[in-house]
Image 1 (tube, rainbow, N blue to C red):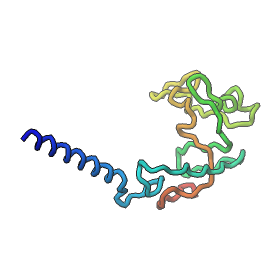
Image 2 (cartoon, one colour; image 1 turned 30 degrees about the vertical axis):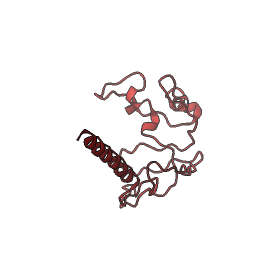
Image 3 (cartoon, rainbow, N blue to C red; image 1 turned 30 degrees about the horizontal axis):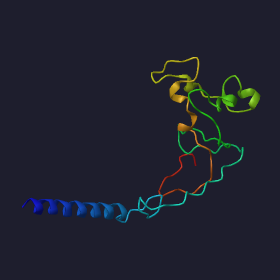
Image 4 (tube, one colour; image 1 turned 135 degrees about the horizontal axis):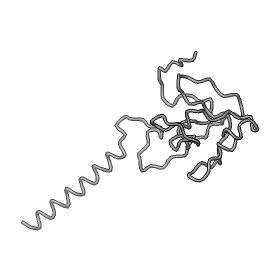
Length: 148
């Protein structure tokens, strides 16, 4: 009886493993940005979009949209100790560099208190601002630009 129980447990465990493997590889008709590939299957990295080179910023698509970045930012260091963006966009440097200065809203705390320096919640610029690029939507959608 003991041998039968051990054998049955082993068969059930192996069956569960094969079903789990099948569930991972079966996409169920869903398509992700990786394509219809199993998670354990290798894929090539997507092609990098070419960002616009130092152009006029694109028009915003909706009210309160963070402006996009009209230049390359590859290699920009933004961490707890430094912020490359502020070397041009800070209130001390924007005139000399010809860059847009950081908005006054970036100096406010969540509670609306003004600070002498950039608020910690606004310090990591690329949480909201992204390099502009002309690309096709990743998925079909019916979005209508409110600025047009």
